[in-house]
Image (cartoon, rainbow, N blue to C red; front, top):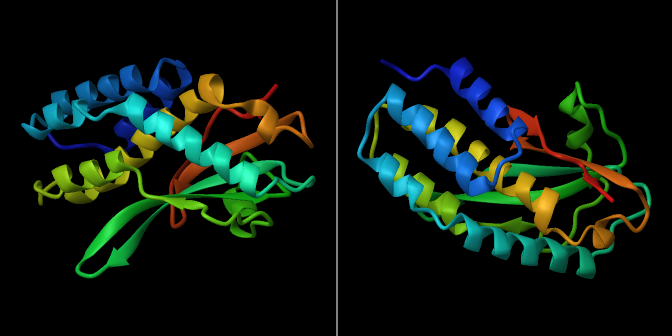
Length: 196
């Protein structure tokens, strides 16, 4: 069998909507894909230290907002997934930007951010490991390089927003901030909003 984009995306949205822990969500997501295309690397991907990654991301986000207070008009955050060229390789990177408009049905709101904090880029270890592991599978690399990073980050950030974030830091001017995560050049998914 081959991977199917639509089935994988549906699996991602279903698991994300269940609001389970990021570690449990990631394992369910891996289980689903392992049944479709059995590979030895799935076990390596199960071993990612999601809780340690979350602690680092929480510290980064909270420091970012402390150093760069969120302007009053910001109603949404975009968490972008990109790759930066470094010598002969590309490094998976995430960044955060804020916007003073939001539309759940049209991602164009994220194209003109009004909040671009200093130190907004971070290169999570888990993303580096995912990229390294799936790069060994030339046949399925393009698919895995699309679905795995967005799923990994969506599960991690959604749980952070729901249970680990000091929301008072983010909600000084608003009682809710919408959050979406995805690729600057394509697919995205809405996460749980930051709310009191």
